[in-house]
Length: 172
Image (cartoon, rainbow, N blue to C red; front, side):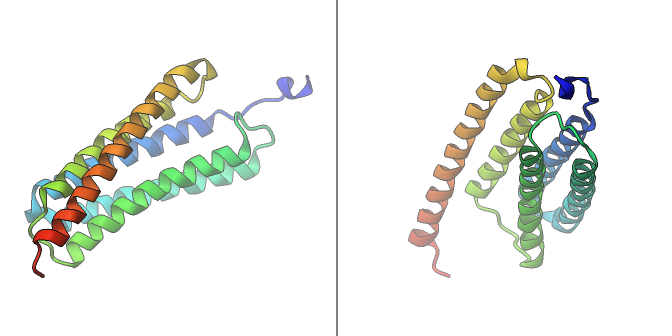
């Protein structure tokens, strides 16, 4: 009963939504990089900038977590959600930096397809995160999670096909 009278901190959901929007921006930049290899340096720089902004939100969220007595959802879940979302952007940055640093000029169709899936998946993550502030949205969130799972399955299939193609056809 006492917990219901205590104020709840709502900025967590704002931070989640802002971070999710940055994940989508990063995915869009990564896809643009895969589509036009003439701009790898600027795209990698853009993704790094986006990732740095997301790191700031991650830090603010964790700092707020340590300052908040009553959180709207479980503390561990808040920490896990924001760090996992940060991991998504970290991986996108790793890919973009690798493409730039290794001076890759040709991107296989499968990599382009993976970038498309990445954009679609991050858009779904953003949709789900925006619904977290109201548990009445649980059914809709679970539906979106199912869609994300299907994208992951598609990405796994594309990755396997790319690996098989690489080992069958690549001479170098």
